[in-house]
Amino acid sequence: MNDDARDLVSAMLAIGYAAVLLVVGELYITSRSTELPAISLKQSASVPQAFHAMPATPRSPSALVP
View: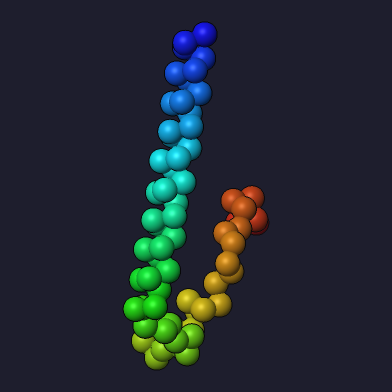
């Protein structure tokens, strides 16, 4: 009986600890996102045009076989 209560308390502490970490992480990300500069989506001259034409998902290896 005592082991069941100890396991329950342990699980509750672990959940509480994880919740606190999630809240602190979210607050950190939120506070930091206001300091980050805006990302420009304008095409740069230093980046080759072929780089932008690549697919977002990799192709399967079987698609490379003729």
